[in-house]
Length: 478
Image (tube, helix red, strand yellow):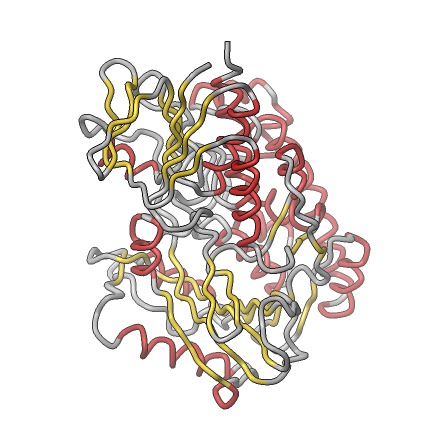
């Protein structure tokens, strides 16, 4: 039986702890925050309950063997899309139904284009699922994919998601819909790999789901399952260093305590691990671009809003201007987006709002916290409040003026996310979408990495798959 320490009680950390415990290891999880779940945060106020992290569950089957009783509720539509011209399109996990909706909203040619694109997306998904997402990946293993000509042609590592959309979709509104999936991994669709077409395929084939009480209940369920299985989860217990020579020896806590470990699994951001926790800073090879961040409003709203689905996105007239503002552009530094896409989550769930009220989570893409050309100093006095007013005004211009119905409005900036979760700059997904991310094995023996900043990527299903990959690499107790 090995002594294993997991650093961080995010979804990846708790999932790997469960798998390693089931394999016969003795596992302790150290989490610096007061509650588990990582970016699955929650905020409660005056009878309202807000998920402050992910709000959509996809691929729930990846959690099936963890012993959780989740009972997810399918969403229809998965997302409501409101385009700049006022046309509305509801997505569906039934491909035939979605084609009918596209035809009704955008015309039969657009539906035919999406059907052709869908066949390509299916090839990308199946190639990615078999060759990339469920196994360790390195530059060498990706190179070996070149011998599988069909897989390589499907994944098209030389092409961008934007280029793929232009090749298959003539209607600019469908291209806009596809572009948005790049932001699911924190990246710019003009530079994101075409392989990210696997994301809408997975979402719209396997469905989008909601957990009653909010997605924060996933973190609570994982935590409870850890307790049932004998995993020790220590909250408010920050790891400040990993001690190692040629192999890990254990971890040092902020209290000064040393805990011996045969194996250490890190669920902190890979950049933070390499820079701050190793005995000597090491270069992090395979680091993709940093993910975008998000600016959030938590709104307590009087009355009901029938024009909103569970998830509704309001697109801007110029999506490229948003990406230029978020990531910076030649000759122009990053800045708050003037006319952003606005994503509103409003759950029809009595567990998260008082009677006759609604809890809105409003998200716009934002540049990371920082002072460089590709970042914004969100701590600048007055900026958060002024931008919150601006986002509400943008919603009003798009036909959803909620300002007279507010009981309260709270903001969460990228600086707040960075402080709460340790995500550098408030990057939502750690490293932005790409085929090659930091690997799941660390630079010293006995050190492994899980979570959204490493392979296979960000988002609840991917970090859970990373936990499976790491647990399989470590293997059962002997």
